[in-house]
Image 1 (cartoon, helix red, strand yellow):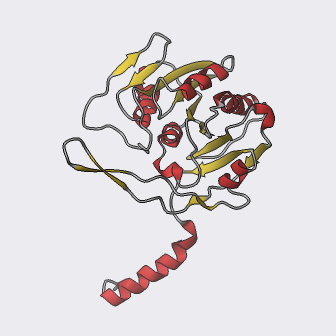
Image 2: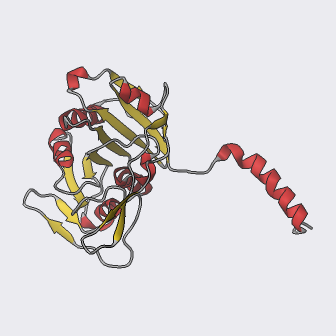
Length: 256
């Protein structure tokens, strides 16, 4: 099995190194990651300049671009042989609920899925103890399980791991995405040249965080495993929206 590892925290991230070390023996591992932190990059691609790829002494490759760039280049040009799957992480902080919209970690996994590969995004719900080894063991456990699972097209697993020793985990839970409350306000500051600048405010706490959500599972010490489907169509409102648009056409005189 050939496994591509990537992330959004950068090629030197301790989470990526822990993931690489924790998956030893499970297959042929290759690392292609951003040359610096690209947290919050989402699925952005670099399209207006060429990208530089550098090989490091440990065999990792870095790209002066986004997480999506890294996976795209790795699958579509850097290597002669195809990959079997993509694992993105271990992210330094949680990717719960609405976080996945912004997450470069999840974006690297979804790019792998767009290119036809099974993919997992893994994040540590960090409380300052940095149990990356636990998160790496969680992914190794998922990959070693003998029973294959097919999520179907355009789907990935979003895995969040409590910041606990392996022995203290409560278990595994299949969850849905919760949602956060409104983010805190932007934080103004003044730069040394007297210009006003702003920090983006901190993410809100879990708003929809009840039983069954990724937030709730983590709060109870469980690993949260959420199947994420990249089709963002709101299928449940298609019928009512067609009726509404039909009425709109009638009122505007656009129907014959």
